[in-house]
Image 1 (cartoon, rainbow, N blue to C red):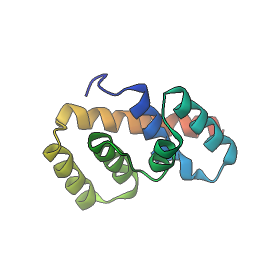
Image 2 (tube, one colour):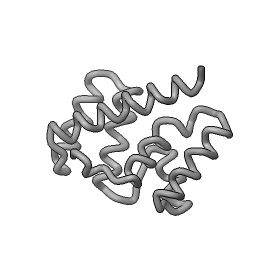
Image 3 (cartoon, rainbow, N blue to C red):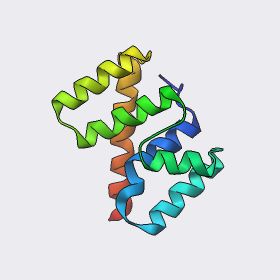
Image 4 (cartoon, rainbow, N blue to C red):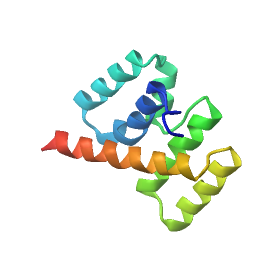
Length: 111
């Protein structure tokens, strides 16, 4: 998915991974970034719950959240669903890299 990720998908990933932190300031920043990326209020709310109205983005968000919340079995199931929707190994590796980067940046911001 090399640079198949748009700013919209990147904003949705950030919301899916970080919006539940309980920090209103972070949530407000995430929402502002999402609006700049062109997301609507409904899309922002959905992404914050790990969902999307777009099937391909929905599986990206599901896989990303499963990487941090699930066990090996759940991750493998999510990979299979992603493959059925057309994501290949390169796409999944890009999701994994983006998740690692987003979490690393968030941890650095918390210091």
